Length: 135
Image 1 (cartoon, rainbow, N blue to C red):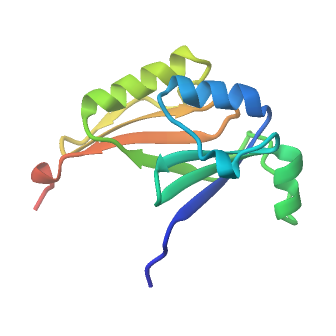
Image 2 (cartoon, one colour; image 1 turned 90 degrees about the horizontal axis):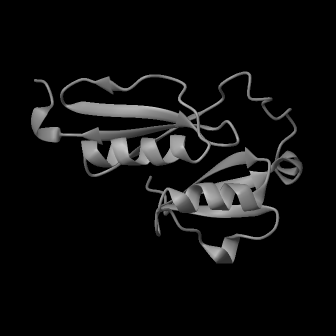
């Protein structure tokens, strides 16, 4: 089984503030799937997206309560091209209202750092050096 693309759906509070936050990190949006209720954040165009959906609208897609941000439901991890890019994105996130929920980790072959975006969604930014993989 091979999927064509993936859309990770996450609740947000304010579309405009969320757009501003992710734009400052250098990301863009698929405007065909974006409106006043949701943003389609492009992670890898044609393959991976995150639908950032206003909580009221998000609630219409599930029969369960939406997390109040006091628990962790999902950690979204994205791989970037270098350790420097990890540090750059984390700095941009923190400088623009994101918060750190855990310190960075360096396994030699994998380096990652974390932030919660302005809506409390948790993200891991990682770099994997496959030439350094153990065994």
